[in-house]
Figure 1 (tube, rainbow, N blue to C red):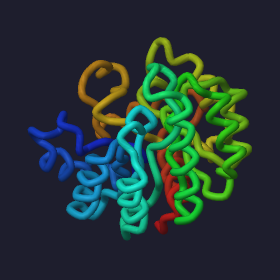
Figure 2: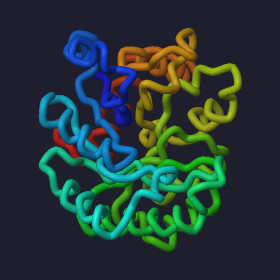
Figure 3: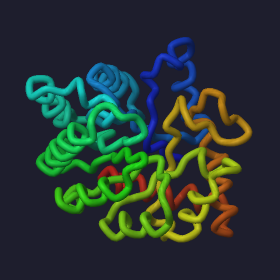
Length: 256
């Protein structure tokens, strides 16, 4: 069984065939999916998906690149959604320094606020971190992220950095990048850290694995990621699938 721990099926890329695609998941061994919010509007569309499909769960939060839209008033809605019966995480939250806006200070402010929400609600966090490794780690340490745990999604840093996040009790999200020709650093991470801290993700519709790189991604491509991890670790794909399934259950505090 395969658990996609990070997807965006409310994205417009799926408007033409969303229902047909999602209803095909079970026959391809995709048993659970967490749909992850990125802005205020996607918090609502994520809620709708989780309420419609029994195998889809929700993460509510605002991506660092969209934090300029947050106010004290609309942040109250995220507090409310974090109590939804199908909410399994707060996310995706974090820091993204690739672009100059929103300001780093604003991103840090809302990262800290959403991290505290997760601790208050006893939910894990889904961390987005791009070109901001040290600041992300420092804010997680000062904010006591170990109290809620979570996953550093679409991991893009060194194995040394991965070890620090794992030591804090965090999982490492691995998706299509592990199959890319320029994915050497992520492959080193997969080889280095305990498999018990790796979870599968797509970040779909983005990050499709080879040979579908550049095309629309979906959970149906995750067996390619499983195969790459198995090759790196010198294991059978079935064993990787089972271990990452159990890891995802632990990450999100789910029963079998």
